[in-house]
Amino acid sequence: MRETMVQPPKTAGRTSPGLLYGLRVAATAQAAALLVAASFAGQAVESDSMVETHVMAGMVVHLVALVQIVLAVLVWRPGRGAGWPALASVALFVVGLAQHFTWLWLGAHLPNGVLLFGLIVAVLVWAWSPAASRRR
Picture 1 (tube, rainbow, N blue to C red):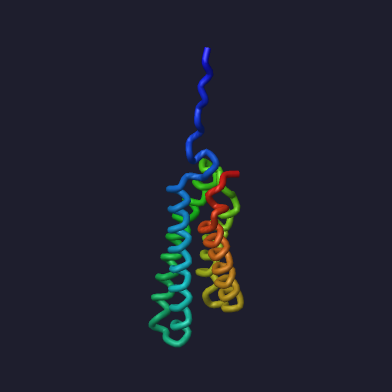
Picture 2 (picture 1 turned 180 degrees about the horizontal axis):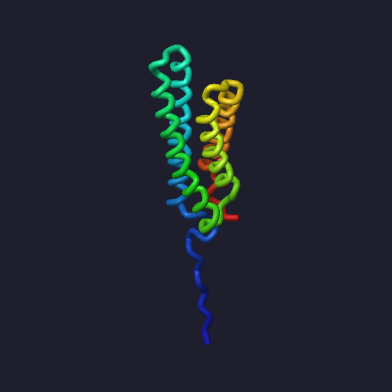
């Protein structure tokens, strides 16, 4: 009787490349949306006509955050990737919602904006690093 060796799939030690790429795209889009929203915020301080544009850019940030949450959870649970990007993505969404409620109180609105940038930079750096493709 002869034993046969079964080769593991090529992605055995890696998360799904498609899901990870989707998370990379979502995190990049989130960073771009935050930069646009921040630039409109600076203009809204000088001109009341830009306030509505800043609010609409914030809505885009929320929509991208929802997509990012779904992708981060899929990379984490079925993909067996790291779990903290999913938690950071949820935090991005929650802090983004807090931005809508604190828009008149700059003492909270500005630090929340800085927190948003810190969270998205952390997720973005991780998503594009080689460590993101390794399974737990």
